[in-house]
Image (cartoon, rainbow, N blue to C red):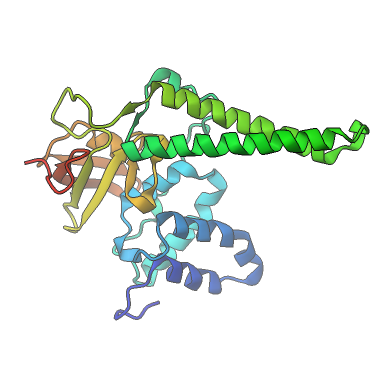
Length: 269
């Protein structure tokens, strides 16, 4: 991986990192390292991964995942695969994960992109179909009168409870959600906008779409408005700079352009 003529992808870097570990240690961290690479995009070059990507990923992991991932990021930096050591930028979200019936939706209406709204509608449709099949499975399992050791019935009931919870959560979000791109109270960046950021230290540019936390996906360039960078970008205008304090130091970026939903190809003047 030290070959300067080749810029490794995340998948290649992950394989190289795992191959240098002892077998017993490799087995403990392989799933987490592979998940990280897939989430950010296995075919992305390591040099194209930004601190924002890593910080965003930290919102979706548990504390036990931090140590192996930081080791991997430090390894890629020492091997010359990245522009900087991204390990200090990986921090697990301190608040507990949202539970079914999220309180977040009670406090703040979700502002979803049109694609995100449609994706939730499709998920809801699929979940209701799954629920119908589970009800059929429960009827079949209930035909066995020995309820004391009826594992199929117990499993079906647990699956139904999970589906019911997720269905209620999605229905609540869709009922209150707004579609990004409606009336705006300022000209600054809002949820649904696509922004181009330039790192003032390296000069590199990164493109992100600001989205509700439910839509966040670094591999697709979707940055949660609840993340440190998302909060810093909100309401900023083209040409403005922002600073985010991270363990590795203060990062400074400028907004090069802002594109509204439905205005692709026509960034903010």
